[in-house]
Length: 436
Image 1: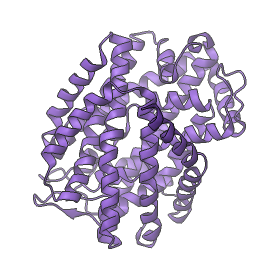
Image 2: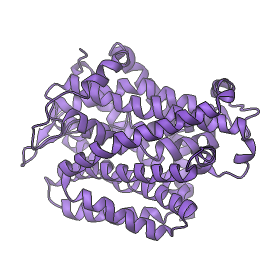
Image 3: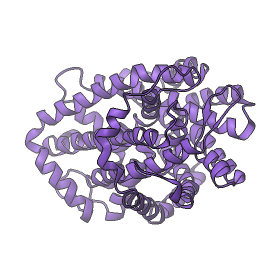
């Protein structure tokens, strides 16, 4: 295991040490200018997300699509992911995570537009789409579509699944003294009960849970920032300075290189909002909305809520706590900087954060299960879906007992492999993308 981990780390150091950072930021910048900054219509897009029909028995409403997309993205990326980014990259990583979200909204618009335009219907009449269908129907490259589908299947089993169950296990162990194996077993049972019901069952659960969880977590972050208000502006100044120098003097953390700041900020930003990977476009294709542009706007807001708002709030909470209570992070590990910050809440404290993380992780497990299901549908025409669901549920348990470092290194590698073909499709079909 140690030898394999060393190889994965070397691959990640190369890919995320420059090539993919340039590719992603270049793609985000290109589509921001090419599409005349669709980010400027964010509030219009937010209003769109609450409209649309909900009488389609086979497909999701635009709001259900957004909720399910957020279910697959909100979670450990906003809590543990931001924490590891700050611990490994320094406070400046918060800035680059945020920039990845702001610019990534344009890339999200582009990939979701193409996904809706080139989607298909399965035998039950349900919309299916994503980069694999864009390759097949838009570029007439079914083999490349199959390659992306295989990557999506691996991502579902080894990224969307294991990172969440691992975080649940770590939280259950530290907060409630639960054995990781028990947490993994319970998570597998709870997620499995929803997963077996298919996309409609997944959509119903996400519509009920995700908005409530997002409001509770955002409200708690705002409360903590109010309590740490004397350190808010110094924290912002520290984040901006470290973002361009890599020298977080006075942060209470060891200073890192500028490349580490960039790597962990952008990598964690990509992990949490998935702009550039293409997975969010798979969920966008399930919408009952017929207009590719309208659905692309709605799907774009998932990046806004996930990274521009919630990751920024999480990062500010962590850095203000470091400045106000440096002793609280002296022995904090990569994933516990957020835990240290939330310990100062006047009510429940770490218990509240633990419950939020577990609930977010559970919804992410549920949302990601459909992404893998879509990949299996593309590869086999729907055959083997039951075996996939069984394998996914088993991986929930396995992820709970894997070491945290192994899980995150595998996450970065698989994300990197998915970015390249997805970005290729975006550039090849850029003239087909319209903005209204």
